[in-house]
Image (tube, rainbow, N blue to C red; front, side):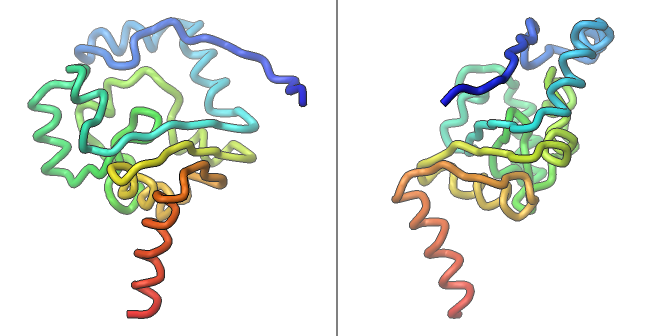
Length: 159
């Protein structure tokens, strides 16, 4: 199978240290062009992480102060680096406001297909939030994770 896709690279940090750095990067016309392209893709393939053992937290991309704010606001994990609540809404928190990326909600609204790839017990809450928020049309996961997601849904239906 051959895809007639075009690959573009955004050469910038994912997270900015502060608002000044964010504004400088986002004011660049090339960055703006690429962000706009990302918000108008046909198919979006997105990754996700849970709060437990989250790479962004573990590797120090976000501060302890950011982590405390995420916990206070009820973050369940991140989707394409944006932290969500259990309803699938992007949280209005400092760390989400420093991300150099396409707007997650615009991307999901405009894409014909949004493919999420995620597995593992630590990601089930994030997967559920994505589904509640309508942020995904196709999910690639493993058997154990699918079983966890379905068993909780069945219990709710039967209980």
